[in-house]
Amino acid sequence: MTTLSDQINSDFWTNVAKYKEQHYQWMLTHKDLATHAVTLTFDPTKIQSFLEKNKMEMKLNNPYLLKMYKKEMKYFGRLLSRSLFGKSAERFGERLLLIPCLEGIEEGKIPHFHCTIGVDDNRMEVAATKILDCWLQTRFCGYHNEVKLFRDEGWLGYNTKRCMFPKKEVIDWESVLVPTSSQSILG
Image 1 (cartoon, rainbow, N blue to C red):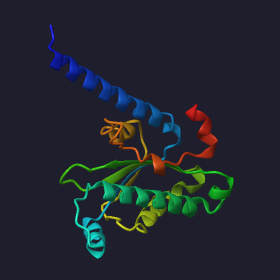
Image 2: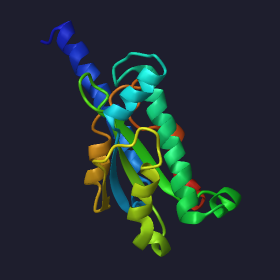
Image 3: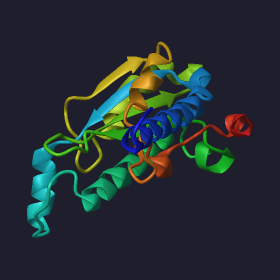
Image 4: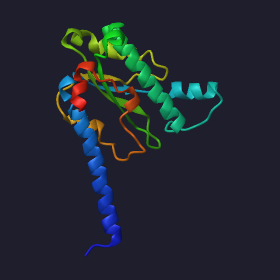
């Protein structure tokens, strides 16, 4: 016989697993479009400089700064799309896959993004350089960035490891870009 506490605990972890699995399954629907596994970092000294300039004092995981990080990701997505595809992406529909996941928002950690990025075959040779160049144009860009070729679903599982609670989103949904041609995948 289990106690009420055991039942509540079991239900909690069952819901966490279900929520994480839903996010993972959504990412799997875009697996075939993925070409790059990317880690993009922030520079804490640039963030501190911004805060001092604006006479603010807060920790790196403050909700205000989390919004700022997401704005930078949205800006990065626009820069990268335009850099790779020119204005045609705006006129004829998005051609870039970008699924950014914000991590490191716990106390004492440095926030950073893990991104799944997909480009077409014509741009594979220049993609890594353009990804890094575009990130360096963002306000808080760090310098410990990594771009690797996407190999398998393990990267997607790594990205969704912190997907646990609806009010603490890991996937930056406002910055997600899905190629127009794959919209039918979403159902």
